[in-house]
Length: 475
Image (tube, rainbow, N blue to C red; front, side):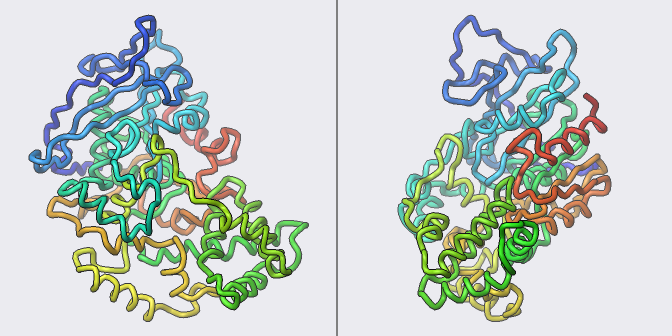
């Protein structure tokens, strides 16, 4: 693919790349292929750093088309190749998910995933702007969950000001390419997991001529997706039935039981949002089949008059705890989601019109499409959709969508990985993405959920990823 965005072609003053790391003088300095970058330093204490990761940073404009908004720091971590007596064969870049998770907090998982491929390759992890080593956004109310997010999101947007639009996928894709250029690689292998695979797609559309292979692990379409994301609730509903059918310990028809449980939730005043979220969350782990069975078991107990297992599973008795701010920034997730994802409403409309458009979408949707739940229950009583974005400001004039208009996917070897029972990024969405990339292979991991490859290097999906990379970039 020859497409390059105007912003990517612009010369970015990539500033010196010395991390704030503070290792002792006895720590060996490590040079990446480009001597212009300087020397990377041992990472700061607190960063997981197996195999001696080194850290660095570059300064890039918040907006490459308007430098009046100033610059931001993009931090990254580099794992030196095992054999430094021979030249580097290139690098594997990894993009973390969320949005909002810092890749530098996941370096152990990436090291294990790519084991055997790093003898003569560096592993590079670039933190999304606004997270980890990349100037984390400071919106404490959002981070701590102090109030409903549709109430506190506008205050975070006010803090960000004109830069609120700058936290978007297209800008982060260009950040990755600037790090690639700063480190001196002509082309790289790019792996993205969850939102990182959405980001990796954006990078491929914007900088595909700089890729030699692409892995999209637990992915979803970069454009053309319905704001209902219909395969998400449908996969969750279907998967609880599949899990029960495959288990000798699950009695009867879990689908019918789910219908009874949904009605019980309505009749007892609990509402179905808790149940919808539970089956959605069940697909987020590597052993998704077991998690769906846990939901079914807790539901059976609730129907039998014992609410304690359900309360424990659904968190009714668990105090809300935020993610560790070093590794996850809720504000980054909110900003990127509201800026880039498909919504029920026109993002340029005022809040009152957005709410009416949401209600209209619910009224007009097929009432039987998500049985045993109604479209209204799916849309407004669960956490599946982005209702906090109702109060997020419209994208500014400098906004760029994740996929540039008219861009085509690069003809680069591409692996799309999906978990059969993944209700976060579904197999249907994975197949849609695979159809967009002309040189792609689709792999579906039976019984697994979301990003199973990162939960263990012996997972089937992890083995498939390594096999694909060996075939296309060598050992």
